Image (cartoon, rainbow, N blue to C red; front, side, top):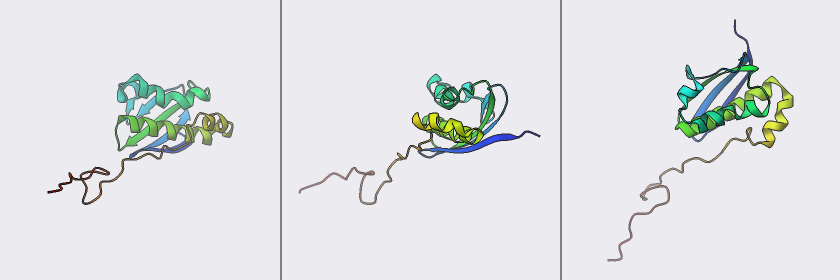
Length: 130
């Protein structure tokens, strides 16, 4: 049986990631695929790996991530947030370094909803004087 060392839920925009940290040698699996396969851009792969790099756990733990909702960038941010929370569960001494780098803070920015009587969230319909 596989034992999870830590579990974390990460969120950004409308993306939600469930992150499981296990003993291993540094493999990261996102929705059943390798992290480099799931996130084709290196920028997003780096974003997901940042909490591991800061806490020097890159080759010590395996990470299993289930992520849904949002777009690629939001999903990468959610993975980073969830991984940071899970690493805090694994070892409380990781908290200070993760907090100082801002990985434990949930990014609250979301798309503003469209209001009735308007063309968009803030855009009004064209005004006609005559």
